[in-house]
Image (cartoon, rainbow, N blue to C red; front, side, top):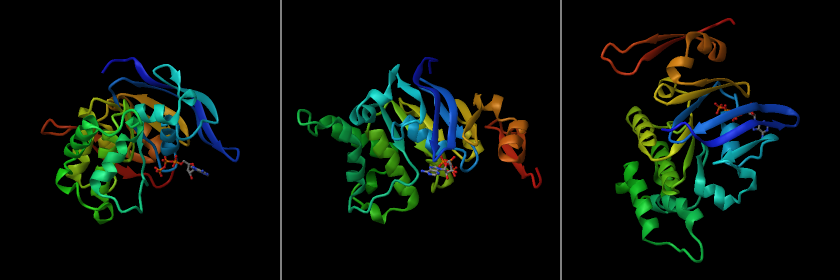
Length: 260
Ligand SMILES: Nc1ncnc2c1ncn2[C@@H]1O[C@H](COP(=O)(O)OP(=O)(O)OP(=O)(O)O)[C@@H](O)[C@H]1O
């Protein structure tokens, strides 16, 4: 990872009917990092990701990709750079797993550059990365929630973005596949921002940003910012960080605070 920014958000905010949902957030996403985004329900994580993906125009502030404002880019230009895997992406269409992953290549196809060997290879590689090759001919509507989630990641991977935005990608996944997805994201040659609820998953990120009521309250390496004080202030829980006696990742034990 280097410390130059791939994406910079300068004082962005989004309001609806005069109500601030995200307020005055500054963030520099660094080339190659995995940045975790955590915060309580309704703190604005999905809204922020949708702005970073260019799907929601900030009420104020500016977002630049490699120094260029994304508000000045076309949908196709943005889609070649940034991909968002959102929580509720569903389809009623009768499509196979492979069809769904092939959709990821759409921003790269033009009349002058139709489907070709590169697209085929990107789809195969993406299916392999999420361990779904054997299910490539299965119909979407026959998949379990976790299998669908893996196909969403494959579709995003096939899109070959430089910045991958994931909104709670470990929802629906069993523990093996949760860790597999997080490890996969870390090994992809792509920068990623991941909204997460599991604090243990946040510990595996290079940096973590914490949102509360639409405002940024902390940003930094997880070991530095996920302190007991922060967990109490943001999540209303008592948290104790317990080192793994076997030398693995630290564990956090939580106790809900009843009256605050
Ligand atoms: N279009 C909208 N109109 C009104 N309120 C909205 C709209 N979009 C989002 N909100 C509100 O903004 C707040 C932030 O929503 P958002 O989905 O960004 O939070 P989140 O941190 O991703 O939540 P969760 O962890 O529950 O998924 C919520 O209170 C939500 O109800």
